[in-house]
Amino acid sequence: MQAHALVAIVTLLALLLYFYMGLRVGQARTKYGVTAPAVTGNADFERAYRIQMNTLEWLPLFLVSLWLFAWSWGGDLIPAAIGLVWILGRVLYLTGYTRAAEARGPGFGIQALAAGVLLFGALGRIIWIAAAPHG
Amino acid sequence: MQAHALVAIVTLLALLLYFYMGLRVGQARTKYGVTAPAVTGNADFERAYRIQMNTLEWLPLFLVSLWLFAWSWGGDLIPAAIGLVWILGRVLYLTGYTRAAEARGPGFGIQALAAGVLLFGALGRIIWIAAAPHG
Amino acid sequence: MQAHALVAIVTLLALLLYFYMGLRVGQARTKYGVTAPAVTGNADFERAYRIQMNTLEWLPLFLVSLWLFAWSWGGDLIPAAIGLVWILGRVLYLTGYTRAAEARGPGFGIQALAAGVLLFGALGRIIWIAAAPHG
Figure 1 (spheres, rainbow over the protein chains, first blue to last red):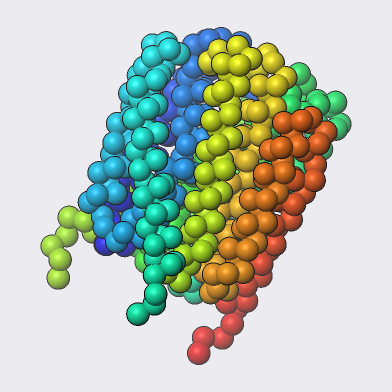
Figure 2 (cartoon, rainbow over the protein chains, first blue to last red):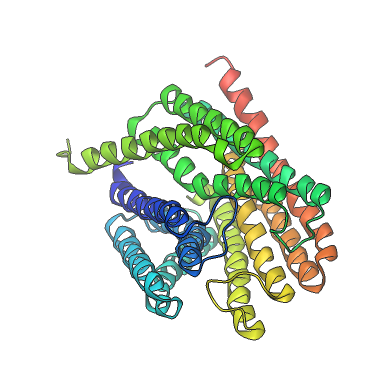
């Protein structure tokens, strides 16, 4: 655990940001009068909802890649730093998309890049491990 | 693995409950005549769908926090017991929300509390581990 | 890590397929003129979206069961092979559902069977581990 403490902290910070996005959906339900189980009917609510949903859609890509990257390369600081870039991208996505759907691009791109580095970095490393002669 | 056998069993029981929620959505499609790819158009179907979706939204928060809690504190019985409380909250959420959208509160609150204890319990413990002098 | 390199590679391949499904949703937005935050309004878009969403709904069931199966049984080749069957089912689901909602059944069934083998295989093994006398 201690070997990946920073990766674990970044993981929990990402989940806290995601939890905050869910809180905002609940607040938007009240503010814009969108009663459960509906998830449509008001554009401001729908943007808040899509911010959370799109982040949920990317969580498995991000979290699984982050940990496979950390385990396969063996480090802590580098995967944690890339994970922080993902969180930064998601914060920009949140603030941009809240303003306007068109302003969600830059944050989305940053988090996609960070997730891609983790996914392909892990995949390349693990194929190398699997193919290497043992001993 | 044996060190966290109870946490693993609770994890799989949570996934089985979640799988059952998905089965109910499939049955509600037939019963209320909501043909794929639609996910709206009948309030009973929409409640069944939201029960599954909201549980999906919380699964990463719950499962990742559960395992980071178990790994960082080193126990099995305590995280497994908190995980059982989460499952209980989700069962109440399922039965309440099926009756009426307004009756989903208590189960939701219980599962949110359990997930919060796991998340903040793990975060506190891992920051303590990361900050502690080595040796 | 090396002990489960094949399971890790299958995990990342499943995530790449899922990522591709997300790309198709983005392309369908442009092609069918469904502007964010909307996720309804065109049946072709809705099928592309449901392909991604249903796969997301099953990812926690599949990935968590895959790794708990691999850890509890201790192998690499067998869980990786079952994981490949899941990916194959999801490819058939993608191609079938893209043609017509009615054609999504066979691929869905294959991936459900693979996930079920992993989930119940892991659950049975872990209960056996937890119940076995130590030493």
